[in-house]
Length: 66
Image (cartoon, rainbow, N blue to C red; front, side, top):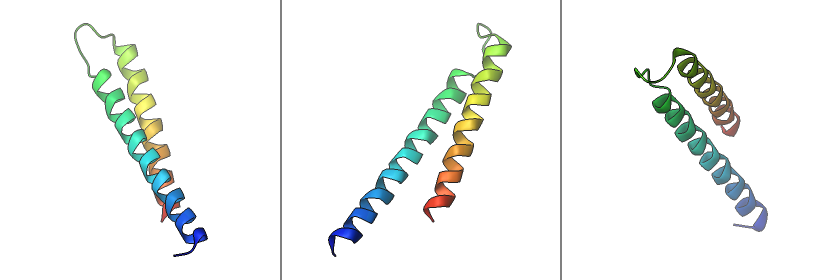
């Protein structure tokens, strides 16, 4: 393996790790936005919206890797 191939592999690995981080963030946003008695519905909806945006970004980057 030459340097160029190694570099490409590293870039792909970095992209995959960022996707994983995005998915974890989305999961946390959903968990934090879980409809609780103490949590207002507005906060819940904003959390869900943020999570959906993160998920869509992660999905687009996954499709770009392949």
